[in-house]
Length: 74
Image (cartoon, rainbow, N blue to C red):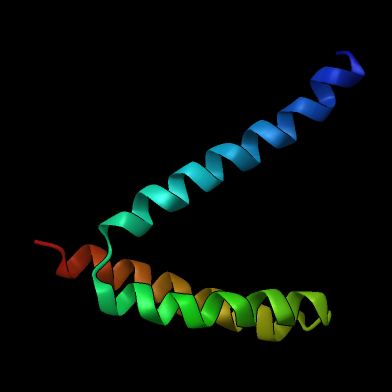
C-alpha cells in the first residue's frame, strides 16, 4: 500500500463519518438540534483540555439525544 493510500483512507473515513452525522442531524427536531449546538462546543473544549471523562460524558449525552430523535421522529 502506498503512502498516498494510507493517508487517503483516514480522510475518506472522516468524510464518511461527517456525511453520516449530517444526515442524522437533519432528521432531528429543532429541540434536539439546539441542545446539540450547545453540547458540541463543550465537547471540543473538553477534548482540547484533555478532559477525557468530561468528553465521554458529553458523548453519552449526544448519543441519548440522537436516540431520542429516532424514537420521537414521525
